[in-house]
Image (cartoon, rainbow, N blue to C red; front, side, top):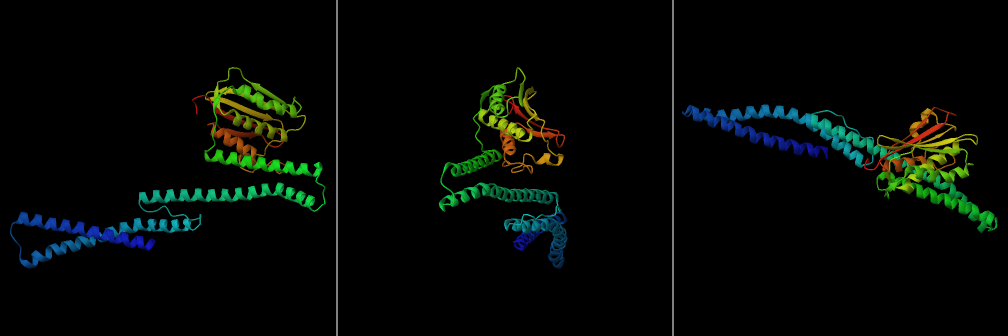
Length: 340
């Protein structure tokens, strides 16, 4: 493909050069005839324009060949690299050399190749993570069912309830993956409505307060919060994920504080806990899919979903921690009405 392109390009350039040089030479000769008025002898009359055309063609070919090599070499490398990308080799890169346009084209190609490589790596990691997460509940269900079918276990409540629990785990995992996929692709449908964000946060935290003994979770909502146009079901899911995650890592004598405050562009919500904290090296990864600490029993999707839902609303989310046993702060923002 590269050789065919080079041959066609060279033929086109030479053909165009021949016509242009010939026209200029003939024009110069005619111009000289018009000025001189006298017809030179036959040999000179014939040789002079031919010699001029040959000389100009030689000089033009040399200059054009040099320019052609500077342009054709990076284009040829780009064609080869495209073939490698099409064949599945996402490590293909090209040198950013040649004219400015060729360098810009090579740079755009390298950026595209890097993004394709990252997407492929993420796809492989996602496939491996999903396979791992699905394997555990499916293994439990299969073992229990085989035991019941073989008569090892009776088909009673004690042996059927674990099957139902694992089925619920699978259902939650599938729902979480679907929500995360829609949020990351920008296809998540949000049913926005004008919402009192303070009341929404209190309603979302109240059931968790009961499960945690009540005194471990406190909600502090400023008065005069601006109205937000959000999907209340999705924001409730964000708060539930963040507070539930804090509960898992906060001891029984610890405390979780949820604060809701206005700021210039909307509302900020913070979930602070006095739990185990997050190592500094792990902070950049807490919102990655399937990332979780070594002692976590969750799927590793809760914080990734929270981030996807916040970003879908036009907000931002971040995590902060001073290190092990120093607690964690999760903060997300939501724009005011008309601010997204």
